[in-house]
Picture (cartoon, rainbow over the protein chains, first blue to last red):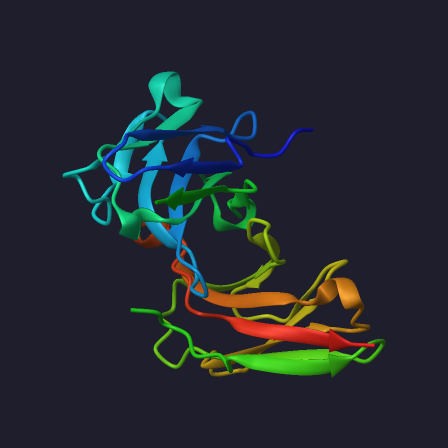
Length: 116
Length: 112
């Protein structure tokens, strides 16, 4: 079974340009997370979806970041316009929703964004 | 704010047991202890989780103290491939607090 798939793996853009990341979660997982990880730090949650509903987006910088999860499956995260400080690894994860015993999150490889 | 405290780094000899400590003195009754690890340039990988009983799986063992204020992740026979950052996380069983909140973790280096 395929794991969480993210693309692209790497992206280099100039500041003020837009960028988008794509995530395909594990089949059947209705919870999807986007995290940002700065160098040397742990991942920080940006947004969490339950099916197509964003249930926690308190850490998403809404002036430039947006996310969507159409039909409750794939998701995209967009930054427009990008700033130098957005350089980081963007991680997508998915999990089942239900009892804790079955809700461990599985992470993708991440997209490394470099803004120059 | 992270709810856990971990040493920033540890070394372990290959083939020996690696014991990674974690303090979570403010853990509440409905919060589980989760461990993830992140190998360089990869996404975090789930290892194990528990509530109050000790747990063991094919990757590791989790020992939780009786008062649940601390825990230890044990890798019984560390290999070079176990070199990674290990994150200890407390997570509620339900509701909006079910997200994973990562701290800075422990960089475990397994030495040949």
